Image (cartoon, rainbow, N blue to C red; front, top):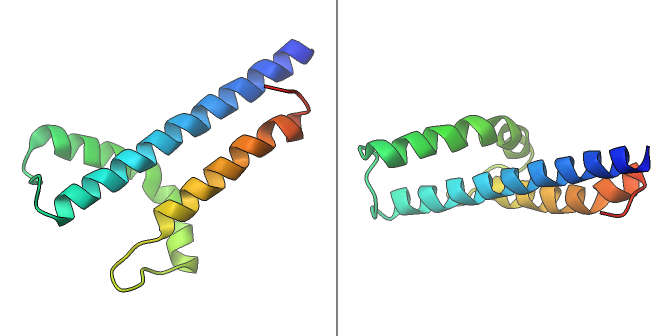
Length: 99
């Protein structure tokens, strides 16, 4: 039973880490778009942008309702990353196993 709980905690942490990577990729691509370093017509970049947007937008939308962009700066990804960091630390404590 202990090993199963440890496996579940590890899987949840891996998923949270992957989500963190997706958020970082989306932020970097949005910066590259904003500073005209890459163009939206690039099919590879556009497909990565759409993929990250599909994953992160449902998580960012409620945060944006609470914290709207200030002077064009969106703090929602930072808040989401902070929530992911906190959840990564809390998962082993909630499940009750060291990871």
